[in-house]
Image 1: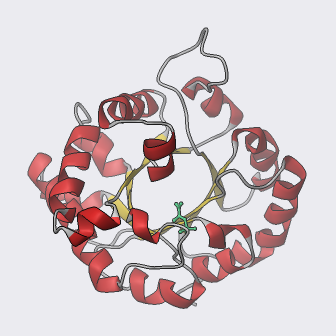
Image 2: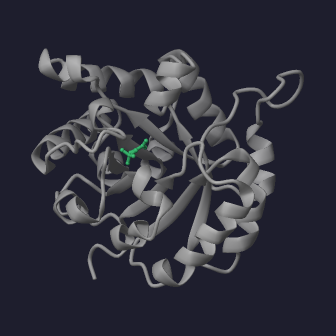
Length: 250
Ligand code: PEP
């Protein structure tokens, strides 16, 4: 089964609105002929200007986070309906930085995944192991546990439409990339887990990204693996290098 690749930038807490617009304009001609889905996941304050700036192009906009309630007294949070109304299509859920710094656990992330689907947003659900977990040999068990917990109550059709990003924590922002074999092993195990929870058809449809210091120099090898359907790109999404990743097959 052939799955269309999806390359998403995770800008994190970078790019003021005016810097965001400059970056969009710089990348616009460079990503215009991509054979992959292109997504910019941007800080909340950048969403409205970036949605406006990519109108009529092949780029979709994602949020880096959202809250689990519809509206109300949750100072500082952003409701899914606000994202949808602003023109957002994707939302990153469970990035390791949110799990770690903001103590978001799997029960909470499961609520976010369900809420995103309720509003027609496509979750990019992140999972990944620490260096300690990798070295003690529990990586695959840990990832399976994360996926099973985060997808409670998600239907097969919903799962088939979403994106999972495998991001080993030790590879994020460190310059240390998982080898393509290490990344493929975990992405294959994620697909197998989806087949166990749902069925093979769902597993064949879901898109699984690798993230963790993916860059122009290593993306080809990673994206050639059968179970790696794209990349979630942090540091390299903030420069023209992102376009080289998007055009990895040209
Ligand atoms: C990320 O945080 O999603 C990420 C993959 O970051 P980087 O590419 O900088 O490692």
